[in-house]
Image 1 (cartoon, rainbow, N blue to C red):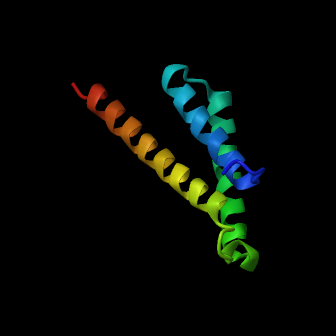
Image 2: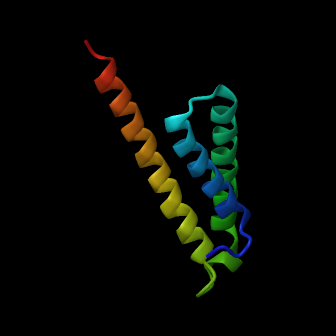
Length: 89
């Protein structure tokens, strides 16, 4: 799965930054995480349009990136819900 895919690399970096931000909030790291996420999504869009990526046995990186981006979205949603719950009086 880690075959040098830029999409997967940016996805992993974005997810890792998100987990670090849960324990060490930092504006610079938050911006970096958003940049990685944006780059991952853009590269995923490009890869999904590439006919070579649709060949049998060539989509492992895409499946991995989609799965991790889904986990990223879930972790961000849980983080927002947790913050709302603990900020209410």
